[in-house]
Image 1 (cartoon, rainbow, N blue to C red):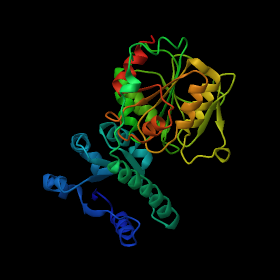
Image 2 (image 1 turned 90 degrees about the vertical axis):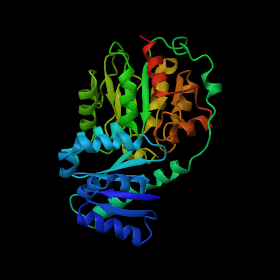
Image 3 (image 1 turned 45 degrees about the vertical axis):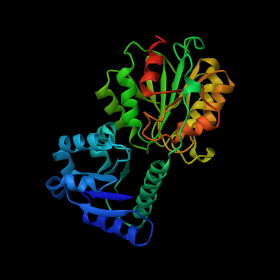
Amino acid sequence: MKITFLGLGLALRKFIKEMKENGTLDASCVFFTYKEFEEDFEKIENKTDVFIFCINSTFFIKKDYYLKFIKKYSSKLGKEVVLFTEHANKYRDLTFYAMQKGAVDFVKVPQKLDLFSKKNFQSRFQEVYMFIKSFRKDDDKTENEKFNDGIDDFLLRKVNEPVICIGVSTGGPKVLSELFSCLSKEFKYPIIIAQHMPANYTEGFIDFMKNSYDMNFVEILNGEKVVKGKIYIVPGGQHVSITERQRFKYVNEETVSTGYRPSIDMLFSSAGTVYMENCIAILLTGIGEDGVIGLKKVKSFGGVTIVQDKETSVVFGMPQAAIRENAVDKVLSILSIGEQLNKLI
């Protein structure tokens, strides 16, 4: 795999080279400044599998140019864009816009590369790198036909007062943007979204969604009651369940046996138990298996389970895992999911 890094500072560039030298990173790596990239982008593009853009002040100045390139490049088969984000709070909105355009994930760049921050950065970067390697090799074919017979209005036949739970990971901002672009503003049933993301990013994600869509996105508060008319976002890094009294409950991380934060399994499982046949659980793009156990729980209580198809997923890992475990009622494109939800109005 050939990775092209753009706009990295000297310290970060040196650290990436150290990772390459000690075998932590086994890809072919080249580095360019943004000026060098602009001068010869076609030649660089043709020799690259993965671009890593560093979102910093230089990127910000010409953000329209780079966002346009990210959208074009990431639309090509087998080509990915990852983001390194400096000054996470300052550029978090720009990070989400870049992910909306097609970037698959981001890694926060520490302000100071001391021993502790290097370890955290390396761990997070390796996680992103490994998932890119894994889904680039994933050529499994999934037959969707058996799930899609008679999809018209299938939700209407099962659900009266629905509560929609959505689990999503890698590629989430892009896919969620596509979903809410086709969801009617008249849709008032509660939607609860668990998007894998680190702490302190939820506010920026909600601002991004509010600015993009005229809908009532809110961050979940501990003890808050689930009501119609809101699109709830689980706080980054925080596990959340739903109690029998239909209230949200923050769950201590030490009591959860999963490396994913927030846990999709926890949200789905608790919602399925509480809302039973009125629960619609939707698992979208992402790597790993988070959400599979939760989908099984929803099905066991008579709820509806849907996963996104391979063609419209950024990463098919989580949906594919659910299909393999027979946890799925329907496999639908992101557009079809939106259309089915609109029929509930």
